[in-house]
Image (cartoon, rainbow, N blue to C red; front, side):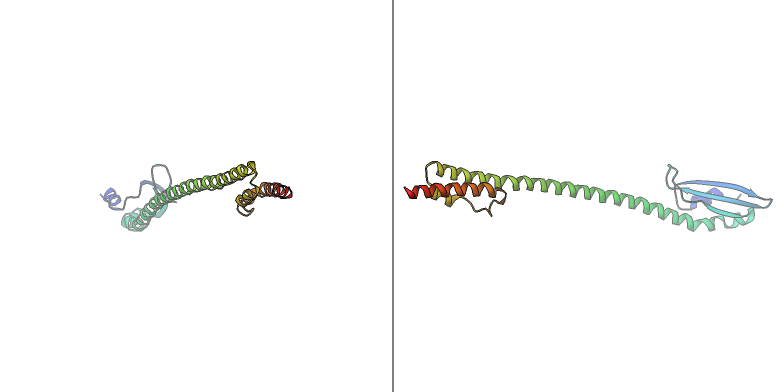
Length: 171
């Protein structure tokens, strides 16, 4: 006996094996060796060996040893690469979530603070306007550059206060 299965066992483990033997005439044989990465049927192209029974007996394991070892390395690298890709995806996802949370918090704070300041200033101006202290209200009124989005409102309030202040000086 040849110890065929002992020879197979001595090779590096490379997933599932499919070996097909076909006859090509009276003397020649064609052996197809297919290695699968996993039980899901993913496979590389098969290794094909052709020769007489004596030739295949003497060289079969020597001929397939290097391709099998390379295939095992390929499968291992493919698995490690897949794991690294998953890690990278998770890290990118975490960074994106963190950045989104930070950005959304910043936007809420950035929008709320200026609005609150504007409302406080306008309340002071309104209170001073109510007691006819127009000059003081004009001093409290911020410049347009401080609240550019409220430029029209500030200009209107400034014109109104200046007109009222000028009316008082005429009396």
